[in-house]
Image (tube, rainbow, N blue to C red; front, side, top):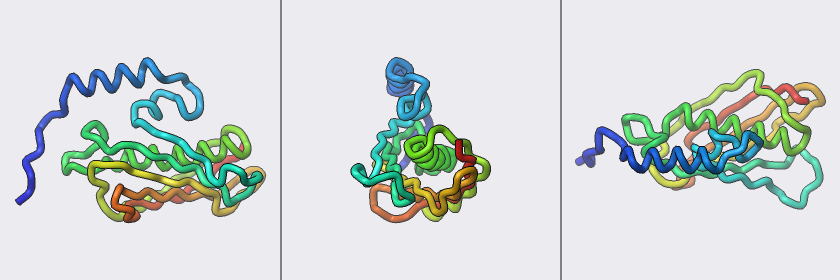
Length: 154
């Protein structure tokens, strides 16, 4: 039997979360408002590697009521945002701010409450155009989504 989910999120918790994101943000990479609202944490791997196409931007974030769809799993728009951000922050790290030209996402399975992780990487890096991907997993380690994208390099 499926558990009964509340019809509304906790308003006080939502206000507190919003206020924290508002107080802690600055409109810069890693700390901009949406990143703070989603609770994104950033890690660049490998940390000691030179500027190569093997670099990864890992983004982790909590899957809470505020980013869930009515079925009780992570909303596809929140997934798309986190995956786009993982790629964009990697572009920023290796070359400065770029821009998404095109983004395609394949959703494979729902992501339940817990921790989500996505990793952005280059599949082919060019001087003016690059091709990238981001993979997103739920806390169970199962691949939930794959994004491919074309990026305009700075």
